[in-house]
Length: 207
Image (cartoon, rainbow, N blue to C red; front, side, top):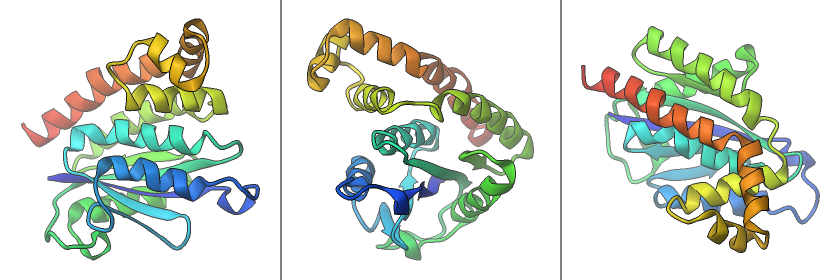
């Protein structure tokens, strides 16, 4: 079993000249493997990424969202699929299986659901529970400012670092970093990821 993220950038065509969102997208995806086997970008602003450990896919989605929202006016839509991978192709675009089908269907459903993050698994009950929780987390994540997004991105990329170290990397004081992380809701989002998301997937994949 594996997990597939299918996504695209919201408002990419409206990005101001000089805003290197493509470079940021490539940079964050590179944290999770190599192109084109593990991830790729196509049609300009669409992308696909495999996270081979399904329980880690939500945090990867949050990481991608934080990275893109460090550019004012931009956001990302993501459909997550959990399932099988039928062939281990050299290019992710040539791979297939239920994980890819589920990811595509989750992505296609985003418009009707009017939210920017959905998951599809083999269980409708799990989907309903997690997508309801996603909707709640998005009430916070969709409102991230550039500063909040930068703080979250730095926090995810340096999980063992102190707030002092994190603040230094952004050129801000420790108390400012603390306030930005608090406003971002990352503690509560991380608690959901650890206490709910991972357990739901573990129960689904290891009954």
